[in-house]
Length: 188
Image 1 (cartoon, rainbow, N blue to C red):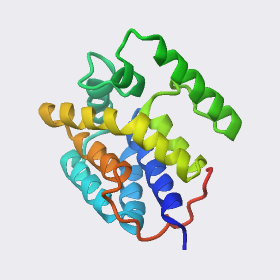
Image 2: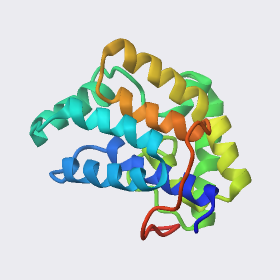
Image 3: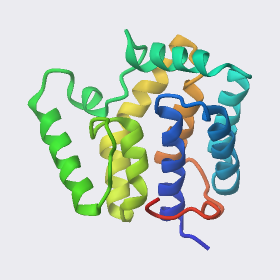
Image 4: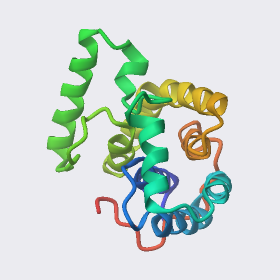
C-alpha cells in the first residue's frame, strides 16, 4: 500500500499532462488520468470526468485552440504561479524560479522547456518531494494561484475549470486517497 503523500504526489503528477499543449493522444491521456484518479482519488476523478464530458470528441485542432485560448494567446488565465503570488513585475518571481530550478537540479528532475513556475511543471515535480516539501509546494506555491485560476475559469465557463477543481481538491486535502496509482513510480 502506498502512503497518502506518495499518492498525493502521483495524483498531482498525473494531472500535469492535461495542462500541457495537447498532443494527438490528449483524449487517450485524459482517459488514462481518469482511470488513475478513480483508483487513488475518486473526488478528483469526478472533476476530471466532467472535463471529459464537456470536451466530448473534439479534434486535436479544437483541443489546441481551446488550450491556446485558455493559457497562451490573450489567455483567460496565466499558468505561471509566480505571476499570481507576486504579480507580473516583481523581482521575487525570479528568486522563486531560481530556487525551483535549483531544487529540480538537486532532485534530478527534468522540467522540460517550460519555465520552472509553470503549473504543469510543478505538478510533475510533486512526486520528487517528501511530505514537508509537498506540503510547502501545495500551501505556498499552488493553493492561492489555483484558487484564482478556478475563479477565473468558472467565470469564463471554461472546461479547464474541472481540471483545476481536481488540482484544488488534491492540494487542499479535500480528497481521500485510497491507494497509490497502479504501477506509478515516484520519478517517471
